[in-house]
Image (cartoon, rainbow, N blue to C red; front, side):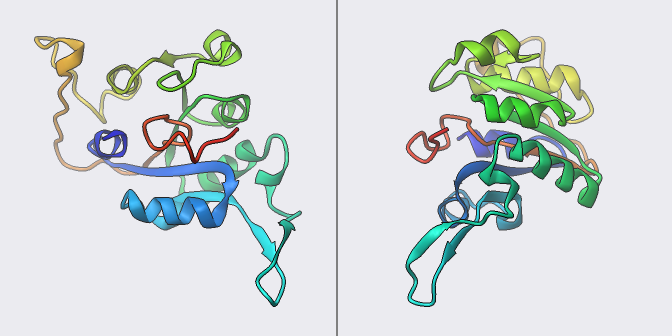
Length: 178
């Protein structure tokens, strides 16, 4: 439901940026029908026998601040606006270099995120409203409906926006561990 609602935004590509293993994130992206190239996790290293050796030491996601570095790389490669929704300190690091960061408490509210995020949402309705307020060209909020009946209208697609849905709890809280 979360991915579907985010995907309805005009010109938005939804992705996942996670500190979980890339192979898990890629598999999960297939389940959600997301573009695999926009779903990024930490690369694992395996030997010739397929045994796990550890994390790729050159992968920025293996280190503190890595999500921000990945967001910067994506921005350089695509030139797209980046909206980041997340619930952890690592997500807030990525939010600093995003065009919009929304702290999310749909599964767990971390006090540090609640206190420091420029925007905070408790559910998808609030996430969509924050996006609408900050990027009205992507959405349209129908003032005659309640928040629970939030509606999206989609004129022709807009160029370049990326929403990272990492840490949005309704995606799959069992996958998210940071």
